[in-house]
Image: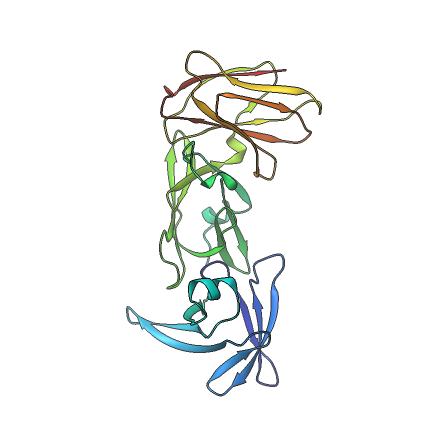
Length: 282
């Protein structure tokens, strides 16, 4: 297990180790670790890896420690090539409660990214169960979590303990996941809008109102507009993969429709009152 995701290590008949890096991903890397005295040499690098045991709180932790640079940008830029760091920890999966399993393979849209925040690249929280482990986080992060009960889980192990929990809260009648200060709710609860709709709503500062939109035809010119005397809202349009497609800062977003499911985010700027009227027109 590493700070993001996990690897798999097995012993070969010749005493070497097979190391599958990022085993959780769609494209894991296969490496070989060859015994080199008290350390292991990596098949495609000059670094050495050592397995050692450290007690923390009276509990032994088996750590994988890297000595020397692997040649990666992280090693070169962060450590100037002089690397001594823990890159992994042996981990035994714990049972995953049904409540957490029910939250896997879902998309939770984050609703508290500020209008001018840099975190809009992929405003989602996702979890999945893989190889008996609960992994996930915000926007592609793949930390391994140990559930403590039905509403709290911690990142497992000693690594990367900043923002180390995910909590479940209830707000606005919705179950929300809270991780690293971000909070999101199930995308299935997002209301739908269509051409001709007028939607009145309220959204607090540092919050976001979400809508889903499915065009009836591609190639139509669509306008999402915040009406009234207070159009101080930023509008963002996302495609079905939740990648940012288009942004408008003036309360008006014009778009030539494409087929598929789209998501509109409405975020108040400091000048906004919080009450808004959204018009969807051709």
